[in-house]
Image (cartoon, rainbow, N blue to C red; front, side, top):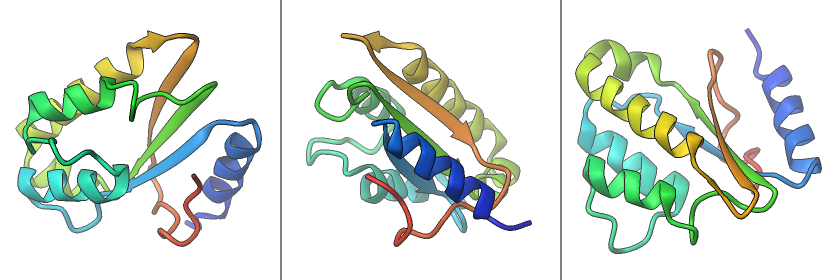
Length: 126
């Protein structure tokens, strides 16, 4: 399967004014790897504590969180991590679900779990 349809969808979301962030978890096998990938892909602040509570706090922080009118977080390459660490993956999903359910000042955060490979960092938007 090609990532062309995903890339086209991301460009359309970007054209609508949303900020698009791609979190590629390909090769991640544990929570430390997930947290490292979150730091680099999401540009999390120095105070990020690399634990579940800190991730939830950062995703809800207006400085990082939903942009106006919104932010789309595309999570790709997650299947290997989900298989290797199902309990950790459930915790990550709960945090992402909670963050996506928050609304502040009209801005929204949406999270998509991509079934195909996410576009490379060079094609990620915003």
